[in-house]
Image 1 (cartoon, rainbow, N blue to C red):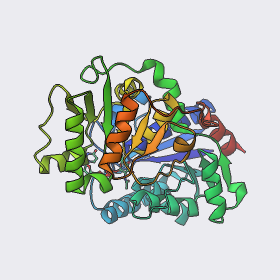
Image 2 (image 1 turned 120 degrees about the vertical axis):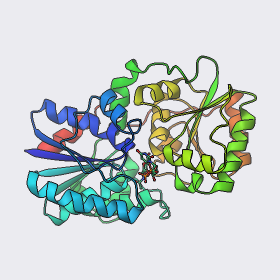
Image 3 (image 1 turned 60 degrees about the horizontal axis):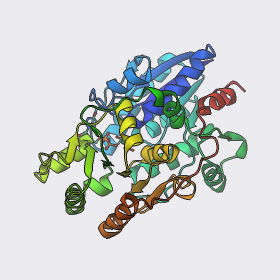
Image 4 (image 1 turned 90 degrees about the vertical axis):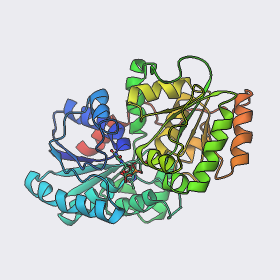
Length: 354
Ligand code: UD1
């Protein structure tokens, strides 16, 4: 059997790594296609190195563009690659533009598609990722879900239950394997209590008055507790347009995007994480670190019902109040999520072999 994997953006890499390893262990032929959606060394190459992912067989080098342009470029450049390699199965990951583009090309050419991290729903169609999730799941043949709610969502949308495989969370496979190797970032916490921040969603960083308001709140917070903020390229551009990208000082540290191991160490050591990322809601839940999510909704509800995650929405006073609560030692306690155990890739491999 020949499996072709499509990856493109940072959060794909942690999800594909354990599946690539597990299928290699079972001796399957594999091809890795990188769409080039993320191309900076710090957003891509360093993850390949740290996660031990083999160099891509093909790089479509699409780079940044509008959604339509980027998705269209992936579609037109991936089609001949797929026709040349003729795999038996294409695996796509998560919810980025590379995911939906890879799935669409494959299904039109009659190649079976597996979606890893299927069934997650925020029910917010203004999020580009929600559209990618809905469309990918409709055309995928094998749907690998990370949590029970995801399977329920798919059944409600009319997906046949025999296509759905509840396998657990592959991102946690990577975390479990690499946590012992996580190093303390030199320019990160350097000891002491700190709040870790990441923000990159258009709903937060493309709304400049709101971004300025959040930034002011973080700046104020830093007089009390250190704030460590690795800045996504999109966010860096927006902060620069507000003349805020140079505001780093001893207490508020704006860093470059961090490599996987360094960021994992930062999460593990944080007093609380403030984020709008999907993956970080899951990782903090697994690590038992309090997480405040700056969104009105989440496609990962188990992180709220079982885990350490709290949605604070776009309400600066709510964010301040919840930060106060956690820093005073009154954080919500989480519990373990079923099948987030480091063995999701094994279950995916078993389902594929069947
Ligand atoms: C994408 C995903 C999002 C995911 C995020 C993780 C979609 C629709 N969104 O958003 O779900 O959470 O990745 O990072 O697929 N840029 C660089 N260097 C890079 C990549 C991007 O400078 O290597 C800049 C470009 O100016 C680009 C901007 O960042 O315009 C945004 O990149 P893009 O790939 O469009 O989406 P993300 O915001 O990263």
